Image (tube, rainbow, N blue to C red; front, side):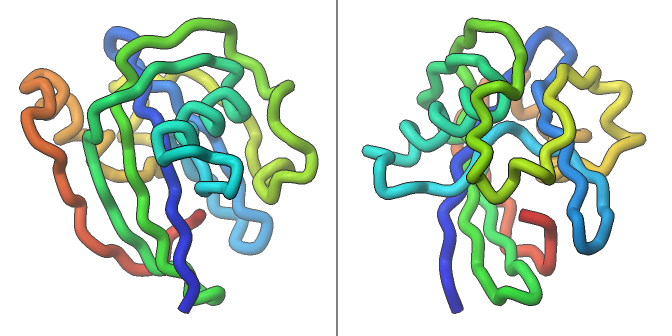
Length: 158
């Protein structure tokens, strides 16, 4: 079994979340996730990974500090176990663009768009982690007093 660490930034603007739309080329599943990606050798930390990946997938420069969620999922058929760390963005600046997405990145052809998604629209979309559709808003109102472990899930998209 291989392992992969993924770091992402949850960016909130009022009642909206910044999400990245993916379409899996194999299953054709359409899903939305916060901007983020795999830890690379050049990353000094998982925080740096979340900052770099957010810039690549959205064009926004973020400052993150608080870990909101930690999750695991098993990807099939590669048998990769993913550990995901979701940071809450303290602030952001810039304009949304995909022009910083490296063409040699595996997700280059999978990522369709990045945009602000209103919380009322979330129920009509496949969103990972699913907590962003409901419990997230309560956790946000409470200020995320602790990091929340979302558990280990079965097969989900990368």
